[in-house]
Figure (cartoon, rainbow over the protein chains, first blue to last red):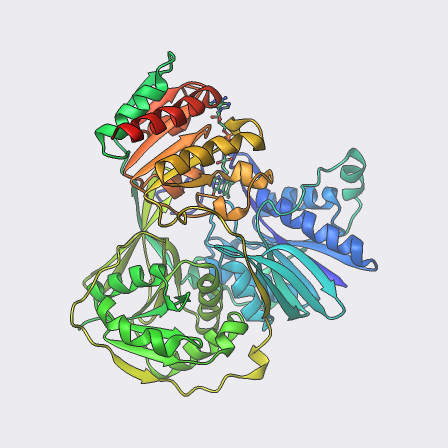
Length: 261
Length: 323
Ligand SMILES: Cc1cc2nc3c(=O)[nH]c(=O)nc-3n(C[C@H](O)[C@H](O)[C@H](O)COP(=O)(O)OP(=O)(O)OC[C@H]3O[C@@H](n4cnc5c(N)ncnc54)[C@H](O)[C@@H]3O)c2cc1C
């Protein structure tokens, strides 16, 4: 089977809070450390697990981003992905959900995938809309919020997380599958993995390779626009008390004072 | 001219979902609210929607929508969009609706703004408020004429009654295509939890990694029980497998707005704060005086949860018998 996983490079959520540039209103990517989205690490782990259980399958990671996004793809290769594709073009800067999905879908279409994995949402943008839009552009079914996936013949069956439990959902292949965060054990690249990643196939595509018009993507094609960026209202600071053995009483007094008992 | 706003209303246990009604009420304030309700219980739900602000309700009472995810609903909305051009599709953020909105956006090239906590029209221009990170809010719009989509964050708006309003009801006669019956629900499994549901609880006691090990989560549950509240959790302990996902509060979990939120051994990462900082009162217990959770707490206790929780459970029990 031809399995794909869509990944993204983002500012490291563990060291920096993602910021928007007030002038361009885009995500600040300079002067911050960039990493493979931690959510995508789970998704890659899910895809690798499935590839290995199916046998005779190839797993390709695909990303849209600036040249620096190579690093994220290298990490995916080091984790065990077989091949990588980077779509990079100046005209893609400022792409919204639709521009991103249109671009990824165009690149995926050329490959005739059987299964496309995405994370449920990215850690920096977290709209969660790209996978569904990719599925629509490709005319494929989408299996979302999966915490488990099994392929049986030409069908995929997932456990889909819901507000109150889960659903068992089945769909024919090819399909787009989104993986819920934390559902799969992470895979850490080994030294051997890192070494072998350098020799794995890595291709780069531009917009013209995909036959896309610059007016459909990037800022030119954006269907949403940020008008302004402001400060959120802060909560008034409360009282901080060090426990000296009477914390339970202090809390109970607070509860009683506010009629919460 | 009044704006026409469509709201997709979901059904839960035979009733309109609260997240849908929140959005419907908001739509009714912004302009002319029209609801779309699909599925086998649609016909019974439809007549009640006037009271929540709908001027008109489109109904398709077909069980196909209950069994097959996303595509039948997208087809139906798509057919409606070919007939009429509303100004806005204002939808609740739920699992199913997110999937529907993403496809609809791609199919009709509709701009999509997610996670809205407020919206208004400035003249002809729609302005949508979206929180960004911990400190910022952005105002976004659809930079073109024509229909756009906005997904509202749960609890951003309150459910209101529009006494005496009667919605006009239109039965839809679309034929559902077999090609769109692909993502089939084979089974639905409910994971039972005791006490009130997180979304409805007026008191929530929530635990994080500071509890040390899964067995200690019982202290959180016990305090929730004596206070008549619901237990919640951070993603750290959900990911670690202590609890099912349904307990998770935060950006990628539930958004809650209880009267009281007690955070036990929770650091207060922005992704967690995103789901609970709308609570009326926040109490935090954490042994690290620099923990970010204290920046939103009305009462912060610097101390050990494992010592304080058992004492607090006893103290609450004692005071309750005295009241
Ligand atoms: C895209 C994305 C989405 C996310 N979504 C969510 C989400 O929806 N919800 C969510 O919660 N998180 C979410 N997170 C994770 C979030 O960033 C934090 O990692 C998580 O909230 C931390 O959980 P925690 O507070 O339990 O653990 P920690 O951050 O490890 O904090 C534990 C705290 O316990 C304190 N402590 C330790 N021992 C004791 C003791 N004995 N007594 C008292 N205090 C003690 C420590 O001082 C510390 O502050 C998300 C992250 C990302 C990247």
